Amino acid sequence: MPETPNNVLITGTDPADETSLLDILDHVLNAGVIIRGNLVISLAGVDLVYVGLDVILTSVETAFKHMKVEARTPERIK
Amino acid sequence: MAVESVEHSGLRCFVSESKSPTSKEIQDDALTFHRVLKDIFQQAAIIPFRFPTTLADRSDVIAHLREHSEEYASTLGRLRDLVQMELRIQFKEISGPQTSANPSGTEYLRNIQARREKLEMVAQELRQLGEPAIKDWRQRHSNDGIRCFALIDRTTVIDFQRKIGNIPVQSEFTARLSGPWPATQFLSEE
Image (cartoon, rainbow over the protein chains, first blue to last red):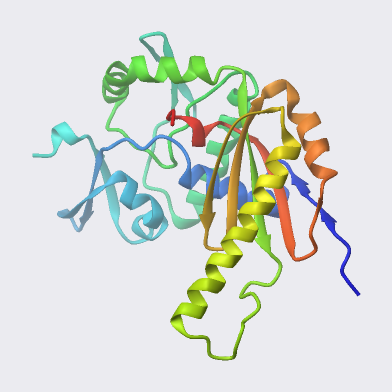
């Protein structure tokens, strides 16, 4: 027997709703303007790597967990 | 943390001081960031920065605004009364029907292509039914289906939700409409 069609589910932008929470995190982390700045990731006072700001965004939680992250603008990084 | 506004070149940018947050704090910060965006977005068009975007100090914010003021002002003018609704369409079955137990590479790719075409057809149907409220439309495939973005007038959100919510979707798919969101998929003109 064929299944009956279902309707489009409507969700809002309220973080209390679990589905919306995932959408919200997706939007704040993946949508919007990216400033082409750079981040310097330092460990024990030593600058380790220079990464584009858009690159760090996907792994920022891990980066913040383990390292000190200092923001600098491109002009200041020579 | 307090949210401050920085004004320059006719634009207002909202910022707050940042420290290196812990893993737990970063999710709370992301949600706070969302709440601030939402509050302002309820009153006016906005251009969100991805979270977290960090600049060294206030003068760098002003320098950024100065450099991009024309582009941002033009975008805000274009999107003044518009919002973005997002429609995600997926297959209920994640892997999809296999034509054989061990499909060849060609068979596998054909299967993927067929699924993409089906998703595009559903997206097209929903787009047509959502007309004429839709001012612009963009879509792209994702790992789990297709994501469609409809640009609509802020005043038509409730009607649009009602209209799309009443559309039956074939049983092999799930479709979910979320929003209104800032029109981040329409910041650039195509």
